[in-house]
Amino acid sequence: MNEYNWVKNEHHGAVILAGGDSKRLGQAKALLDFQGRTLIELMVTCLVEYFDQITVVTDKPDLYHHLPVKLTSDIIVNEKKSPLRGIHAGLSVSELPHQFFTACDMPFLNLELIDYMSGFALKYDAVVPCIGEYFQPLHAFYSRTCIDVIENQFMKGHFKVADFYEHIRVKYIGLDEILRFDPAQESFININRWSDYEYALKVFAEKQRTCLNGGEEI
Image (tube, rainbow, N blue to C red):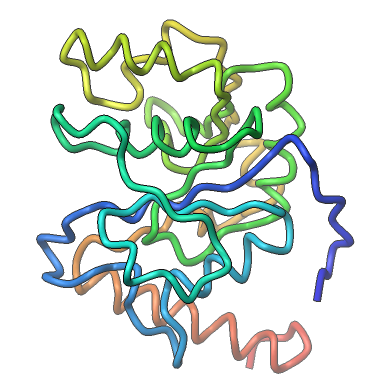
């Protein structure tokens, strides 16, 4: 159920990047179990409350055919594998002007924060959380206006996502803004190691207990 009565915006879609090799875990992070549901199922269930169109960028589409999403693989494949390739693909295959991008290992997406960020998307090429000197480039909105810039970055041999920010109009979402919607900054929890997964399971269980107890922590 849509708790916040979101108005879905026809200009925005969401893209989940699921093309990483997960070398540290040794298995697809998107398929990690969260009390009977896979991580990517959790993320899609959350995002579908706000976005009419969800795209998954992956080189293993057979893993995700059961999801109500659009599937695509990287379009640029002769360059170094990086999230920038996934951003390029997600922007290229959609007719929508703006996309919210997230990695497939971020269990605690906060729709209130995403909704706040979306309010800037029409005026900028990118909307990116920034805490001190650290960007969150895989919890960000990007516009199709970035496609040519990204392609130029590849031609220059630059594969880091944040490297192309200096060539576009970016709205940075600072810590004070983030804390208004996500005081614990759980939106940016991601899973790279088994210890990260164990921590995410603990946070998830705590959230489930809180929800079942009517908002009061047991």
